[in-house]
Length: 613
Ligand code: BGC
Ligand code: BGC
Image (cartoon, rainbow, N blue to C red; front, side, top):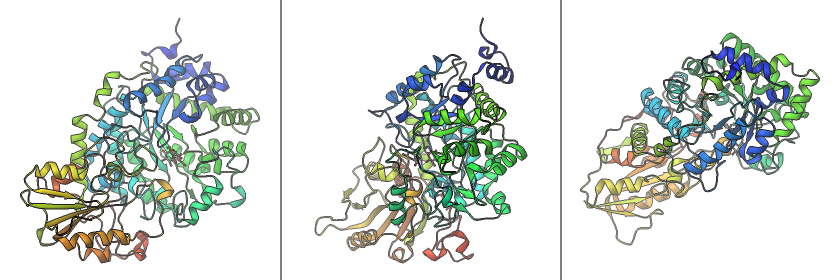
């Protein structure tokens, strides 16, 4: 006889109740554990009855392709099916602009670009396409959308936010949730969305990425020795200017917290979000991971959130010197599943101890497990643990790439166009193209692409901006490319295009003291301009940079953000096949003195929020 929880014709509530009644404490704690694939084998996941595994940024199989991804994930799913109760495991990834860890996947513009496109229907379609590519690899959970409302563009996660405006973020975040989930959560192409990072990750103050209470700073004992967040590493990094805002303190009133940072979560919940990731940051003297008031009273109580809360990467380790206190504080605050990147055995045995000595109540554990199981049932994992392998044919498909190209076209913002230099004529006899971003997919994709930090070079398949330009002119005129602007003596042209690019980064590694565009970039544009009557500058970046002075010499200026793999979306605009329609989703400051946003007086920016020619 099969147990009622395995009967698909029963309702989810009865199935959860039946299953929960059969589970041991160890099995319950297993469901609350999410380990990283590099520290756990499928056999160990089975042995410890672990409920979830993730790939962190760059947590890729080798070789890295859609097929090896699918097989890697399937090994964990299959191991879970061999446990006593055969509770399916859910695998999570950061598919934050397409299935971005996977070589061959379609990479869409980062959220900052989608914010400029201002098109919820487009974001929903991107969510659907992303979900299909993610599901093709047997993954049913992504840690997206970030619904951060960044108020200080020195933050290395500025590009992960759709924009500085609460309403815009709420609208687009909800659209992505709808797209990822699709019509029906139980279909195998539905991918569970995660609104993150709760709450006010985008509201932290510069220079506050330090422990709130130095006494309560962790031993970092649960962290891998070479992790970027070990104390030694962190010290060096901070000295170099990074980790200033990320994981910092939102020093704002509760009214501001609720007005600026909370609404996108409400919108995501209305769109069906069932998983929310808690922020590394702090508010009111407490790390978010210990905020019982905000997590349990406000989110689960007042706002009625019925899904589950996932912690961020090793984030609970930052709560206290004693690991058992870290565990008790976070789970008692309302965390349901804990992301334990390294020593999951230590987590499981310590939580078991906390449960046995009453530091964490069995009722709290049951509530957490009930929430997790409800979502697993809703996703249909018990009834169909694997996705359809035929979906592999859709990874990087022509249709998805066409959608990404459309998104690139809609996200680029034309900020200057003196004398109507754009659109360019296809029949111009010669075009000069320079800049490290012109022919480099890595610079086009930015952070969170194949590797956590992103990486320059031919990191995946796609079309570079240069390739797009060459295809657009198709032999009509000559296109000469020199990344460093060192064209042969005497070579001149009517127009030169320079594609400048910020070095890719992620999280606090992208926090910066100074956003002034580098001297070398300014000089490169000047060198190209000496050979050309007009110069068009395209900037690939995760945020606005300070360009006020050099801009005077540029004839046209396009902010293209980090557009992803389909660079021909830009050539579509350069040659006028489509009009520019993008509008800034962040105010573009004139100087560093205008950052953060609160330092900027109305009307004094270089380009206001919503600007775009
Ligand atoms: C980031 C999250 C991400 C998680 C898993 C953390 O460091 O803050 O945004 O989802 O890692 O990769
Ligand atoms: C992981 C990321 C994670 C980060 C946090 C990296 O090693 O790959 O996913 O967000 O660590 O520190």
